[in-house]
Amino acid sequence: MSPAQIRLTTLWRREVSRFLKIKRQTIGAPLLETFLYISVFGAALGSRIDQLHGIDYVVFVIPGLIMMSWATNAFANNSSSILQQKFQGAIQDQLSSPASPLELLLAFSLGGFTRGMLVSLLTLTAGALLVDLPIEHVGVLVPALFIVGFFFSQLGVLVGVRAEQFDDVAFAQTFVLQPLIFLGGVFYSAALLPEPFQTLTHFNPVYYMINLVRYGFLGFSEANIALSLGFLSIATAALFAFNWRLFRNGYKLRA
Image (cartoon, rainbow, N blue to C red; front, side, top):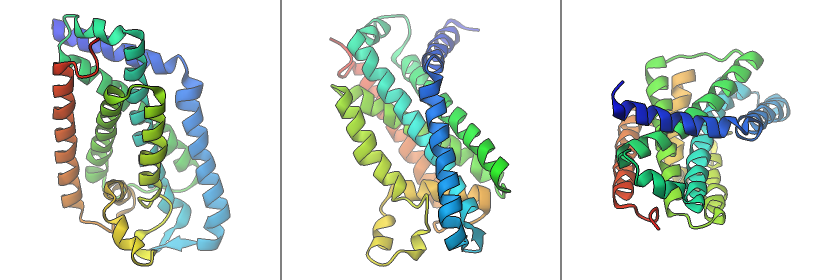
């Protein structure tokens, strides 16, 4: 391996080791939360709603929960990790090390991505054990999940860099990210909403991410798949480029 690959791998392993040291909080708690969502919504609402668009309600919900698990955990990992290292002064040492800003950004990104992927895979396993979950379009599902995970990983980096205290991270997660996810159609179909709420839902970017994942699993979507995947790819690339510029300039990272 080249020196750059060794540095990147070492930094990535440090991030993975960090969240595995508190795995009951970083992995166990999100998995329990998702399992409760499946149980409560499947048992309580599934018996009343029965089906949405010809799909069993609990099956309809699970793809959204998998996407939500990947998104929230990738975001939470990077935003908290970067802010914590800013407080400790460790991030300044890393910026002064032989590791380039790109290597540092990739290491943080892959750390959050890995945590999100791990929790979502466990969520997928739990859902598959409870219901018969099909995978209709793996060619859409895999890139959609990977781009969604990388997007929220970058979003976590951005919030972590700009945050000055832990309340800033908690505010972004509680008052911005969670409402966008819950109002993006995880637990319902936007087509069933009355106006103007149905139209407003189409301005929520998370709505299109959920539709991509749901299409990959169930073959059902309320949005154009090609356009959704294209715009999501462009948004992720733009966010990565912006974060790279922040790291190169040391914005709010250097003392």
